Structure formats: structure tokens, C-alpha cells
Length: 512
Image (cartoon, rainbow, N blue to C red):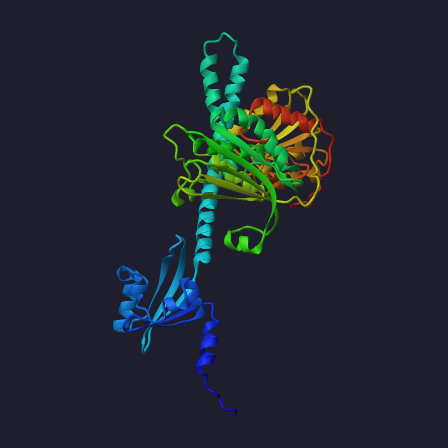
């Protein structure tokens, strides 16, 4: 067996110096007697400023802090301890260290590990989980609310069409309809936040989207706001819903205007960027690679850290009561994330704010879009199989379709729908089905019925998106969809569009 040679002082020093963890040895007189290279880097000081110096002299006031009490207990009692310490540097920056304190013959040994980035990512993860939970709740509420609004808006609209212009009840019913439409707009914002709205994505130039918004913004911002636009040259294209991205630009700009009550400068910038590994390591759930950035900056009042952690939550607002719904930025958050992007805010009180949106560069030039035939009339005589598990919604949909001349076979679940198809002796031109139902989804029902009646067209309806027909909020190619709440004219128009458009096969495999 070979002789084991003991480590020399130089070998030991080289070994400890190569560690990423900081090592400090402090003697019983509170003097630094050893620091490895990592500990020196953590301190941001020269070795001569610490070696041989007392802690109290090197860091005045340290003896009044929690760290010193841990060191003192270990020094006197020999009790090991561990803690996290926020270390503030003279330049105002802060780093977080995990400290392990052990007794030794000279005094204490302190092992320090920089956990600043990991703690930041943990905070981002907790925030993302909270937003996801709130989003699921918002989507569920919007789904149930859209069913109720279908009844309110459906019957109020039909009553208005039945009443004469001079009928005294007309004004009251119209108020019900207007209130219902406002509530529907609110649910759309909740669906946007929860990433459960239906997007119609296209490959677009983000510069063109911003240019379209710029014309409106110059009228809305007011004369005391200077609007500056910086367009990236040869900008890469992105796969987004242009109408929804226009809403993102408008909401961010109007939010910036509210942050500048006495006027200021609003800058909108677009450019190509590449998010590298260093950036993605510092930002949770960000994929590295080429992106297109949209930045909206203001010279307004800015925000503190606590406000920044809540600005994307629905109904959170810093405005006075009655001055805003608190849904503008949450809508932006949902649209951006549903489009596969990310949004981050950078702000300091009194120094303005910058919102940066990063959208992945489009990997293809175009997206197949189904062009539905524009109807010349909203009436028809075809047979429609209506499947809806909510009784009130089914009745109002049946009433709307009957009023427009259609023959309606109503079913409250997939079983009844299958039975109707088997028993009905004539052609059924259209299946109008809710997406989310007990036992069998609308998509599964459509696939089952396609085996019996292959020529029957399908129109889905729902109060929120569902993976049965929509993947990450994107409507399957070839699938027709109508968003709840059901409005008489909208439903009649959508039915007519699907019936009049030549049949085509979906490019998706069955059951996807």
C-alpha cells in the first residue's frame, strides 16, 4: 500500500481557494484569520482590508445584527447554526447568502453560499403558481357566468326584437341588455387573464401592429404626453392574434399614461433580441432563443417592489375607488403568456417603469386560416342537433335557432344526441355542441357522430377554452367555434357561416 502524503499548507490553500463556497475563519478576538478566494469575492474587498481586522471594525454595527448573535452563540457555546443573510453593499446592491457556522479551535468557521439567484427564481416560481391558481379560479367563474349571461342577453335581445319601438318596457329591457354586455366584457377580460380565450393567430410584423395602435394612441394620450416610437429594422415576425396584440399595446400605453398624471414621455420600442442561457437562468419559465421584444417605457411615478409583485393580478389597482377595474394589466399578462411569450416589469419609485414583452420568433411564414363564407341571410331551414347540458342555455339557444327558421333537435347530453342521430330519419346538417359536458366532451361526441353522419358539420360553443378542441388557446385548424355568452345575431351568423362554407377535413389526427 502506497504511503499517503499529508497535504501541505500550500496544497490545502489551493484546494480551499478553488471552492465556489466562501470560507472564513474568525478567532475568539473577532479577527479574520483566513478567507478563501470565494469569501473575498463575496465581501467585494481586498484581502488586506479584512485579514487581521476585527469584524466590528470592518463592518461597523454588525454586532447589533442577527448574524453576530449566531456567531457569538457558536463561539461561546460551540453550537453550530445555519441562517440566510441579506448582505447590503455600499453601492446599494444586496446579495443573499446561506451561512453555515461551525465551532473550531481558533473560534468559528463560516461557510457562505451565494443563493441570490436561486431565491429570486423561487420567488418567481411561487408567483407563477399563484397566478396559475388565480387564473384557474377566474376561468371557472367566467365559464359559469357566461352560461348565465347567455340566458340574460339571449332573452333580453329577443324581447327587444319583439317589442314595438314605443313600448314602455323597451327602455327597461334595454338596460338589462346593456348591463349584460358590460358583464360579458368583464368575463372576456377574466378569460384573457386565465389564458382561456380563443386566439386567431397569424404570422405578423409587430411593427405593423404598433403602427396601427400609434394612430389611436396619439389621440388618446393627450398633449402633455410625448409619444416616441422606435421601430426595429428588418424585424422578425411573430405568431400572435393581431387584435389581441393591439389590446396589449393599448393597455400598456394607457397604463403608462395613468402613471404620468402631470405629463411625461412614453416610449414604445420593438427589436429583435436573443434570450441567452444567462437571461433564462435568471427568469423563471423562459425559453432561450430568438425573440421579438416590445418595450413600453414611461417617465412616471414608478412602483415599489411590493406593487410590482401584484400588478398582473386581476382586480388589483393603485387607482382611486371607481377609477379602474384592475383588469388591464392582467389581460395583458394572459394574452402574452397564451401567445407563448413572457412579460417583465422594471421600475423604481420616482424613476418610471418599463414593461418588456418577449414573443418567440415565428418558425413558419404563414398559418392556414379557414375563410368562412359571409352569409347573405341569417335565416335557414336546415336541421340542427343542439347539445347543451345546461337547461336554461339549451332553451335559449333552441329559441334563437327556431326563430331563424331552423328545425332543432335538442339534447342535454351525449347519450341523447347519439340516440337522436340514430332515430332521426332525415339529414342533420349541423351539430351545435357545448365543449365541456359530463361523461363525454363535445369533441368526443363529434368524432362518434362522424361515424354515423360523416357529412354533418360541427360548430362548438363554450364559455371558455378546453383542450378538447383548443390547444394552449389556439383553435384547431378547421374547427368552428362560437364563444359564450350566446347572442342571437352572433349565433345565427356563426351557424349560417358554417353551413354555407364548403366542407373540409381537419388536418389534425383523430382524438388529438
